Image 1 (cartoon, rainbow, N blue to C red):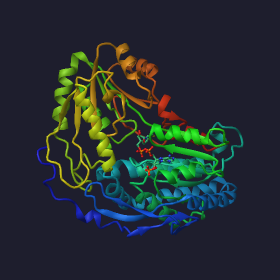
Image 2 (image 1 turned 90 degrees about the horizontal axis):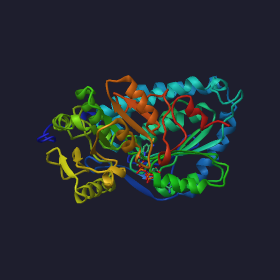
Image 3 (image 1 turned 180 degrees about the vertical axis):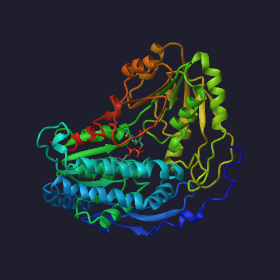
Image 4 (image 1 turned 90 degrees about the vertical axis):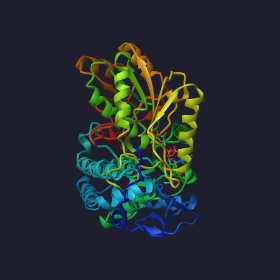
Length: 476
Ligand code: TAP
């Protein structure tokens, strides 16, 4: 990666999205002015201001919840097959407008277009198709013969997969007959607002989906609103704990999808080239802004040198740069705040005696960038082995035996995901049994499918999203 920014950007893709100078809130089927102030959303790759966004205050959130409550009376009584038609329609419009959604997602989030185009947006459409299929079959979902929706769902999502997290929240909620008020992250509101337009295009009844933009205070107003029946949150463990305290003692049902510090475990009989691809995908996909990222690499000692040599060689071929360029592998860090956090924790790695290796490249002065980085000589006590960095930084540890690998992998307050690389089927089953993680991938990593449940143990949260299990959080 000598000079990753020396190729032309792709301005033509920018022109396919029509970004308005300012956006209001989406309440009761229409865009309305917020009563509060506004904030800017920027492209993290260039720091260009993309649009001015309304910041919903408590009164705005209350109006959105009232609209959702009113719509619930109609939506919850609609036969499941009718609700399904709307969800299918939304799924098809997402496919039709997929290019626009992918470009907007990459602009606002900083992720490479080949990820938003080939992973995020197709998975979003797949989620709506999948849950559309459940809407008229809920009595067969295994949660009783006459399952009922909960009511109004207040949903708060992070910035790393803005559209995908929206789909994980909205599709099952609507399929079950709930109505929603969703707050996207402050740094990535644009695709949620485009989704609001898609709801209008699909003629979704007013108030079934409401989008309130804003920062943490807006999220707080939403989860604390007395007329919200269900809270669904994805984000940091710290905010998740605060939300759990807010709803304690109320009748609100809660699901929390929080942080992670996944171990990606490579045994000496693994297909090494394939494992190296999985390690790279595990930590550098989406710049490492992934709750289930394989941020701790555990390598069996006998193949340590070989794995490290091939990994560094592969990392050197990654192309970092313009998120809208189809050749880009690594895009921009989502915000200046996140970049500061990554720099700080990497600095702690240096200070604690781990050895830093990073891909050499010139970074632009504008935008937020961090090169693909790994630390060797990491011990379990190091903060970079314990804390979620949420960036393109890999901590490498070693082990000798499967039981040592299990012990190290489970030595974390988190329990969201893990990866195992080996040729032995019996070892995969053994590890899957012993690892305390919601998802264990074998000879692959970061694979997502709407039919599979996803969620954590311990401080990674509770409840499952995706699959049949994802319906449970939205039904009585
Ligand atoms: P957070 O700071 O927790 O923010 C998540 C969302 O909560 C944002 O919309 C945020 O608004 C809002 N928020 C902040 N304070 C709040 C409060 N007191 N009450 C209610 N809502 C509040 O996390 P983040 O920085 O966006 O995302 C990174 C974290 O999310 C990582 O730890 C990552 O592991 C986790 N994550 C987990 C998963 C799963 S599936 N487990 C998936 C993605 C991300 P603002 O954006 O305006 O601050």
